[in-house]
Length: 324
Ligand code: ADP
Ligand code: F6P
Image (tube, rainbow, N blue to C red; front, side, top):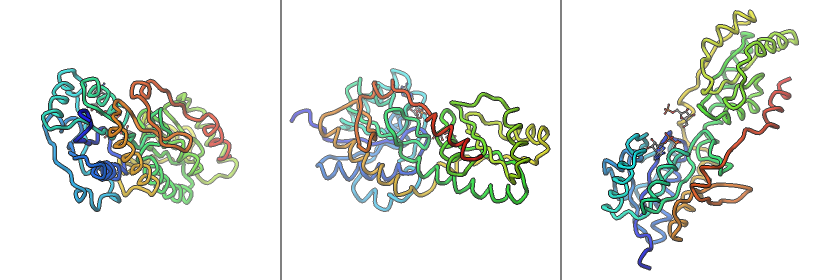
């Protein structure tokens, strides 16, 4: 077939996520098994525009499945949001014989893949973000590791919070998405969770809840605050002066993005990476891989980007009920 894909490029873009290496490994090895060449594009679209492109053999991804971060590095690249940048990117792909590109990242990265596809380079997106905020898929690579890292850290803060009978505000990642905060809220038994999608900035309600819980004899009060709301330190000061309960803020930060991926992340990343290669080999382009209703699926990127995702009302409600 004249138009058959010969060489697949792979890049990671946007925030890194544990499991990205497992996805890269799967792309490289599944492509080699299918008789394709693979080229690693370093530092996302920034590296593409700088022609930081290296050939990848099966051995180049040895000993990587268990490693956090991304061996290809990642970056954010403003230039690639311009038509000139995208045209240059497509030209560089052609120059290096890359006729298909697998983009591991979030929604922003998929917009880049959509633009490359429109310029004649076949593309497939693989959802890699700790935020779980990609609407077309129930799972994104990195979420399980990140949420377990956060959960373990919050357990530790809870121990000391209980000993000192304090209130603790613990800030987790998620600038626009509250999934890590919601899951930790349930898993850590938090008294309050503040999600960008839900929080009404009614601090008096938090104060009332802390006072009511103290009267009930609760020895700690855990508030999980998503990064998108932020301001945990100043919130702690205001809450302490309004309640008289000693309050401390802990910002977990980027530790949530690192670490060895969990089994779940390795398996989803491996499957999604291989699936992306299969799509390119079938001549598909402008697709994004997802996981829905127990199956690996794919969507047109334009449709995927138009989808909306909502925080589960039920989980939000029971999180509160269960910390009674
Ligand atoms: P994520 O992929 O995690 O959502 P970003 O939103 O930071 O992360 O996007 C990653 C990169 O994708 C950006 O730095 C940019 O290079 C590229 N990108 C984002 N939006 C667009 C766009 N509208 N067109 C082309 N490329 C884009
Ligand atoms: O990867 C997603 C994420 O961790 C968001 O939760 C967060 O808002 C953002 O990345 C922060 O990214 P950085 O600090 O790398 O700019």
